[in-house]
Length: 82
Image (tube, rainbow, N blue to C red):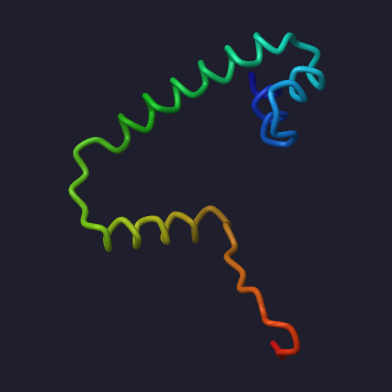
């Protein structure tokens, strides 16, 4: 399952993933649906009964991004110095 999901992220297509891991396209589709259903159940469990306004949600997401190593970069306009 892990190899299928990792391959799907890398190649971006069900058919490409099926070819890469040597499975039938329908098998990959079933695995994706199964993983999606599990992720939905997990997400629903973790995010139940939250009472946050929009600003709190934005702050929470910013905090999560800073802890997971996600880097936000700004695109500089041509001809400007850093």
